[in-house]
Image (cartoon, rainbow, N blue to C red; front, top):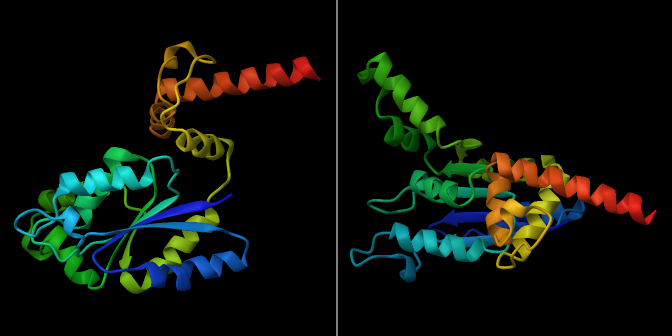
Length: 224
C-alpha cells in the first residue's frame, strides 16, 4: 500500500526526500508519494510578500484532497515575517486532526526560543502555560533539519496497516461520492466528511466503523 508524506518548506526538498527517504524505503518494499508545498510560491503570498494563511490553507486542502496523509513534515523557519511552522501545524490540524506531524529547523535552539522565549526570565506558571500551548499542537517530533528524514522514515515504517487506515484511504479516494446506505445517520454525507468523522474519533465515526464491520460479516456469512 502506498504511503503519502506532505512536506511544507520554503526550500525545495524534493531531491532530499527522494534520496534520503523514497529510495531508502523503496529498497525495503515501501512506496512513498511526496506532496511538496513551497511556501515561497507567488500564489501563496500577499501584497507584502508574506505568506497568506488563507491561501496556504486552500493550497494544502487542494493538494491532499482524495488522499490519506501518513505523515506531515514542516520547516519551522519559513523565511516569513508573520507565518512559521506552528501556523502551518494549526492549518493542518484544522484539516486533518490526527495526522502525525514532524517540525524541523535548521537552528533548533533559535526556533525553540522564538516559541518559548527565555525560560530563565519567566516564572513557573508562565513557563508551564507556554509548554502546554506547545503540547496542544500535538507535534510528534521537533528536531534539527538534518534529522527529519530519519524521523519520517521511522513514522512510515512503524505505521500499522490497520482496517481503519485502509478504510480511510478508500474514503479519501472518492471524496465527493455520497453514502446512500449502511448507516442512516451518515446518509447523504460525502465520503470525505465521513473520513473526517473517523479521523476525529467521534462517536458517530466509531459507530459507523462498527456498523460497517457487522454488515460485512453478515454478508460473508450469508454468501458462504
